[in-house]
Each structure stands twice: as C-alpha cells, then as structure tokens.
Length: 284
Length: 235
Image 1 (cartoon, chains in turn green, purple):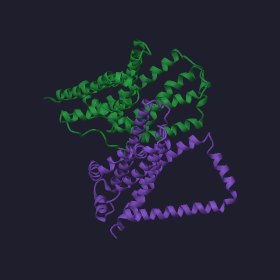
Image 2 (cartoon, one colour):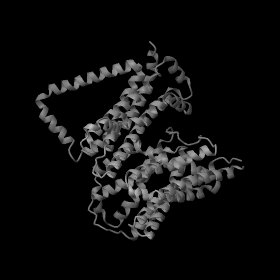
Image 3 (spheres, helix red, strand yellow):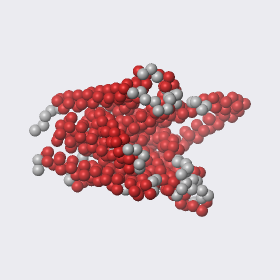
Image 4 (cartoon, chains in turn blue, orange):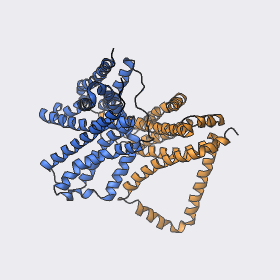
C-alpha cells in the first residue's frame, strides 16, 4: 500500500471514530435530558477527550505505533512560541471585541478595564494556563497531533487547514444544535452558530497548526486553545463591569473587525506555513 | 530526553497513577463518615477529605525523589548527553504533571459529586474545585521547597534539614510577633489595609504566579546544587 493510501486509511478510521462519538452524543441526548447533570458530566468529559481517544485507537488498530505524538514540551528554544500561544488569542479577541467599541466611540463602556482589573485577569489567566491547559490535550492530541499530520500530505497545507477547521467545528455540532433540539432557538439560528464557529475555528486552526509544526509539540497548541476559550470569558467579565446598555448592537463596524481579524490571522499563518514548506527539504 | 521520560515512567508509574485515587479522597471521607452526614452539601467534610488527599498526594510526590540520591547515578547522569540538567528538568516536569493530574482528578470527582447531588434535587450544593485549585498551587510551592533540599542533602538528610529550617523560620516569626506584641493592632490594621476587597483578587492571582515562578527558580537552584549534593551522597 502506498504511503498516501495508508494515510487516507488511517485518516478514515480516525474520522469514523470521532464521528461515532458525535453520533453517540446525539443518541444520548434523551438520557442526558432525563438526567441532565451526572450523566452529562461523565459523557461530556469523555466527549471532550474523544479526539485524543480516537487518535490512540487509530494508532493501535492500524499498528502505526505511538511515536511522533508530539508529546514533548520542547521548551528549549521555543519559549517565545509558548508566549505567543498565550498572548495571541488574547490579542485576537481584544481586537475583535474591544476595537469596534473604541472605534464606534463607546470607550465609556470600557470602564471595567482598570489597570488593576486587567492585571488581575492577566495573572489569573497565566496561572490557570499553566495548570489547566493540559486538559485541552484531549482535543489537541487528536486534531493537531494526529489529524493534521494525516491531512497535510493528502490535501496540502491549505487543504489541511480547511478540512481541519471544518472537522473541528463539526465536532462541536452537538453543542450548536442543542438549542434547536431543546426548542430554545430556530434551526436557522443553530446553523448560523455552526457556520460562525466553522469560520472562526478554521481561521484559528491555522495558527494552532503552525504552532504545532513550529515547536513540534502539541502543548503550545493546547495552551493557545485554552487561551482561546478563556480569553473570551475574561474579556466578557471585564466588559460586564462597564456600563453597557442591554441588547446593544454595533452593526457594520463589529462585523468589519470580526472578519478583518480572522482574515489577518489566516493570511499571516497560511503564509508562514507555506513559507516553511518551501524551506523544508523535499523528500522522495 | 525520551529515555529519561521512559525511565521515570517505568520507575514511578504507580506513584504517578496514584494521584488519581488521591483525588477521590473527598468522596472517600463522605463514605467513611456517612453516619455523621447531616446534609448532602457537607462542605466541611469534603474539604477535610480534600486536605487529606492533598497530604497523601504530597507524600507520594516526594516518594518519586527517592532512589536517585546515589553517587554512582549522579555521576552517570552527569556524563550523559542530557546531563543532570535534563534529568532534573524531567523530574520537575513529572512532579508538576503529578500535581496537575491530582488536581484534575479532584475537580472531576467534585464535578461528578455536585452533578449527582443535583440529580437528587440538591442543586445549590457548593463546589470545592476553587479550593482544590488553591491547594494545587500550594503543592507547587511546597515541592519547589522540597526538591532542592532532597537533591542537595539526599532524601533522608534533606528532609531533616528542611524540618530544622522550617522550625527556625517558625521560631523567628514567633519572636518577631512577640517583640511586636504592643504593635499588634497596627500590624493587623496594616494587613487588613493590604488585603482589602479591592486588592485581594490581585494579590491572590499574583501569588499564584509567584508559586509558578518559584517552582522554576527552584529548578535553577537545584541544577546549581546538584553536583555538590552528589559529592555527599552515600557518605
């Protein structure tokens, strides 16, 4: 079997296992609704580790072995990339959320952003990142540590970013569809949420893919993923301390910054990935 | 480096895995003292179990340091490509990983307990995860103190010297307090001023960062002291 066929087979098995977990999530919904807490907690923990579990099962089933799981911390020489993993999601979401507020002339809404509050949030995020980001290995070991390695030789770098983002966001489908299935929102609302997430995760995925390739470790990606989740909450908390009126809409300006930040992220990191591919020696 | 990771895993895997049952300590405390339970919440009992788990996990984390205080091993590891710096780095990373594993186990058990209690109709049950997080950082701080002593003086002598240092420190603090007994009100007021409602979260988050920084500093200190310690092993 050629290397490409072997890769495709491994990727197929991996995706099949991940989709089974997603399917199981939908099947278990009734049970979860009956016992919305304990069962949900247990299954949710299992589900959040499903990409890593799928990669381990695939490695075992296909006898690929457990080498090259990118589980070394690789701190030496990569400290700056760890710092980038911490800082970039924060900058990304600050630009996405805060810039439209400032540009539209509502700086008074940012009254919660006092030096002391911002410093507290930063310290707390840094401390939590050190001890809790390891939990995101459950996803990163699968997406960046396995799937991207298989998709890149098959579909190229841009294809790997696109497919990676789409699969990553489809994996979140049970969460996106929960509102519609519970009758709390319409189907189109759920689809819109899914589409927005797909766009955001595809863009952010390029950064995580670049980070993993640059450091040859999944830990910086796990850290960046943790910061991706937490920085939105931290900014939201600081914003809530300001005097923002209810049901506020910034309109066009918010969309401009939303898309501009995503496009900048994609352009920069796709560019860097392609440049590094050009530089790396070609193998037969 | 992979070889060192493999060595640590083969030698200490049971200690590493024992962090998971340590996280079940709050649940175990509830099961053992079930006759004294008055309500589902039982926060005091759960915190008691949490502290017991914290102490047990701490003792187990120290056990992974045993067995490396041999002269022959010290010289051999120094001569390898990774050197003693690499060996100590893996040791520090492993102990940090053990603390994180303990923390995850604790938080998972607590989340599960709260969920089961909510299923039983007690939805206002208090979570102890934030206390567990603070204890986790305390554990990082304690290990940052323990490890240099162990590698500088060996496992037995190190813990004895550490004990003496702690006693001396405690005596010094007591002496300072006794000498300032007249100014106690002023000191209390000053402490209250520093730890007021506005500052407390900043001080707390800064404290967490300091714990992490001290852990790294401890690694650098241990690297400096290691060869001096090796000279004294087996004597």
